Length: 344
Image (cartoon, rainbow, N blue to C red; front, side, top):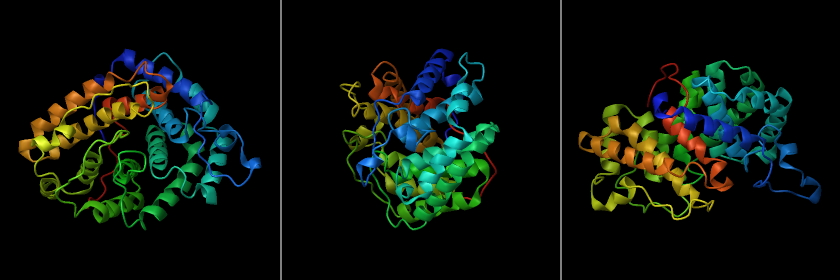
């Protein structure tokens, strides 16, 4: 998990993020309606199918904007906006049971996997660690997705190495953090086993990054997962084999931020998120990297943070409905250290 100090986020920016998140989770339109339907009678408003998480353009963005409200309430409770009011409004037992019933059905077997599931389990762990009252309402949904996650990841032979929502390393790292935070050994073990199965043998990474719509670096989120999974000496050897030439000109595209030509374009706004996610990956990897790469990692983290934050506000709803979550995850981290669970 990230461990950024709260002081990295100014009170002004924290308030702006909270205000945006509260507005987003209540905002029903525009909506990205992605369900497969069998007839016109199934064309119902998103708020009917997903009464807890219908806002903020799409389901997963609403989940992580809700997480943002919870995280800010937890670490900066003095902010002069009552995020609890919107949580009372949306995270009710009835609303969360409708969500749970959907994901327990055939329609929910694959939907929003793995990204949305990972954010939901992160939200669940955050609420439980804080002992907030909304935790009990969310539990039925979290239990369904926990079971779905273990069923899926235990049988997933191959990973997805894309830079968008389907990336398996990013989701597995989030779920692993959530599991460790609440002491869920079975859930944590499912992530560790998959990480070793998918990535332990990777050497000489050779993909070209980024793609035009990436908000994750496939290389860095994979390394950030393996940092969580492998003992320190084993990780250093793994990383040296995975990216042996990290300081070469070949990887300037990983070390340096990508210019976002039009951050008001919803797809190009992904590259603004890429800067933020690369920043936390570089920062959190630094202490685990071979000694010759530590200063490079910290320098890259700083460059990407400055670039990413420059796009967080004022670029339209295509960016506003999600980008602030990545900024908060970078500067506030997620969760607190939980019980010590076995690695590897």
